[in-house]
Structures are given as structure tokens and as C-alpha cells.
Figure 1 (tube, rainbow, N blue to C red):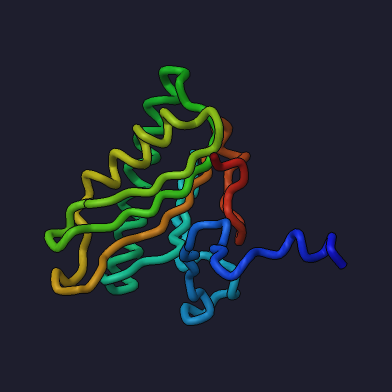
Figure 2: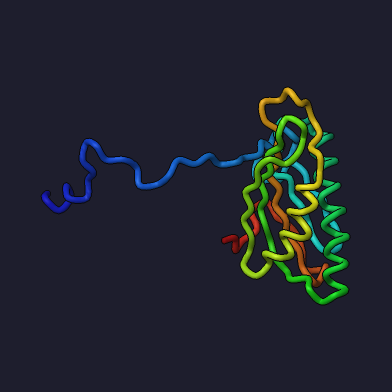
Length: 165
């Protein structure tokens, strides 16, 4: 009995992990399977999945995702031509201020694809003015991307791209 009690925290103990909030899209409301993305934009070199959008209409969120996907594809083509395109995956959560400018980012990137993520995904997203109501309590998106030097090898499935750090 003594061994079992030594692993129990005392009355003033706190959780060892920090509080967190998962970003979950309610894809069932969009008529999709519960574990699918809200919207997916496919391009020859990559796929951008919209996991969640806040403070904007579904049409505005889709248009923003399409815009980011177009910018990403243009960048990927330039990098491919110079031999600098690396296959990878990333998750970017962006929050906008009341004027629609990106005010905060959380970026998770697969190992080795940091530069491609910054140049082709983060930079275009930061340059985008978010649509939606300026009086919305919070505007933002969670996007997941997967890309490849070989366009036939890309895709975002119903789960998250693997290998983030």
C-alpha cells in the first residue's frame, strides 16, 4: 500500500501539464464525416486543409483557404524550379486583429521543411487581410498543409499531417 501512495500528489499538488485547448472543426455541420476538414483546397504541389475558421462566414473561410492555396502553389513552383522545394507538412493557426491583419501565429512544421513553410505558407497568410466582421470576438483560421516535390505524392487525409515538431 505504501508504494501506491508514494505516486499520489499531495493536497497542494497541481497538474504536471499546462492547460490546452484543442482546435476541432465541426465538419458534421458541413455535411462531411466528423473527422474530415471543413474545406480542402488541392493544388499540384500541395493540399491545404481548413480545420477551423472563426469570425467569418463559410464562404469567406473557403475563399481565404483558396487564396492561401494559390499563393502556396505559386511559391512551390518557384522553389521547385530552383531546386529548393522540400516535401513537408505544417499546421498554422492564425488569429487576426480587429482590422483583419494577422496578429498572432502558431506554426508547427515537419522536420526539414521550415524554410518552405515560412516562405510559401506563413508569409502569404501574414500578407492576407482576413475577411469577416470587425466586431467579431475573434477571427482566425487553423490550416494544415502537406506538399511534395512530386505532385503525385501529396494529399491531406482526415487526420493531421504527421511529423510536426
